[in-house]
Length: 232
Length: 345
Image (cartoon, one colour):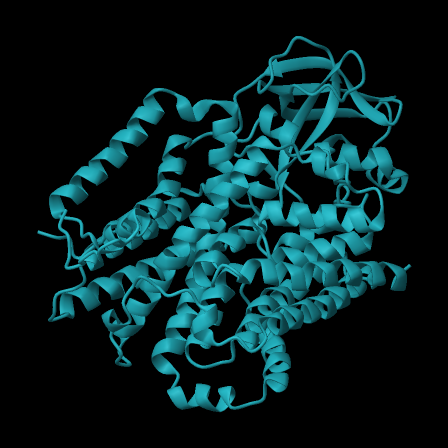
């Protein structure tokens, strides 16, 4: 007996509605989307759920048999399940050192953020912007000798001053597709890429770059929200 | 699986017989259950073997899923509008639009984009529906290309991304003007093509839809459009994620030496990243080592052509559409970005 295509379509639609509802209820949308686009998740959850209900209602009210599911349509519906499988394969993963090596180097000179309320709260982005923008550096109080505390992951980058390693966070605006790793060199060596560290120390200048001279480096667990956002 | 009544013609090539079988062979409940089981088993094996935890695979899967999660709700908006057009708008409304001369339809369609605040994925099903219901293909394509560039949400986000002062006004003006020109060029490139020559026939039978003006007919159209477009977004997102996970973006940056190459290289970035037009200005504004002209090229091309859209266009329109669209719009965008660079200097 052949499958009624309407049941298969409704099933896929229902799975997507359930996925968006779970994403919304669990608050995990920020692992995929930036703050500007997170409204998509409740919107998708509500509209997909309503569409599923309306489609199911139409099916139940229908008095005639629906079309049979063809191989072609079955393949299409399975293709729509692939992203759900992808999410289930890497439920807690985040972009790391390898992605940083692929998603950088296109002259991404960062948008000037709002200055931190206290200089000691300077973020990766603040420090990187201050390297090339003396006005922002003065406004934010970012200068050699400033004590900072940074939480990030180790990037296996060679594009750092000698004797340092790159500690970075990914910043996103829209979704992970536009993620950009923003790193600050830290004096030291021997840390494995992707290790999350909390570094406390003071800033110094090495050429054009600000470098952190650490007095405490603590390996920590990856934070619940691994990405930061461009607050422009 | 059952074979429907599709009698192969004698001497028919093997590939055509396979295509016919692909489109007409129906799936039995047992076969469907087995396929579903196989799919779940495959996911379990990939997970258990740790194949998804390599750096490349993980980067690919994360980028892929985030593009799909971001794009699908916009497809849904487009499917909602498309279903509303199909079910609730009377045929005579399209008849009167279709009787207008093409020279009037194209600018009206371009300006109509102001009223449709969705990104590029949503405008494709709407344009398809408009063309299918009698709007001139050139005007439908113009609307499809203009809406994601010039709608108020996109222009407002461009204004905010560029800081809200003179530069923001220049970028908003440049984006709206060049976006309208490129959309009109795309529409004119279609020429006097008839809808049947432009639109690819859909596998879902026309007769399958309920032609009443009931909520059931609306949901049937909505689900049909959503599932049809959705699978091509999945394919386009996979291509984009694969390129992003394997090709270093710094390779593209090396091309940006002169204004023309800078514009072309940021257009290549826009094509690969496949960003939503409502948020891409925040990325463009960050490319401060590129000229404003090159940034404008990024902002105008992205909503007109990117990797996921190319797959979507290929499924919606005939094979000649994408090359002709690129030929009509890319040189114009490059030239427009150079002129823009000179004007705002």
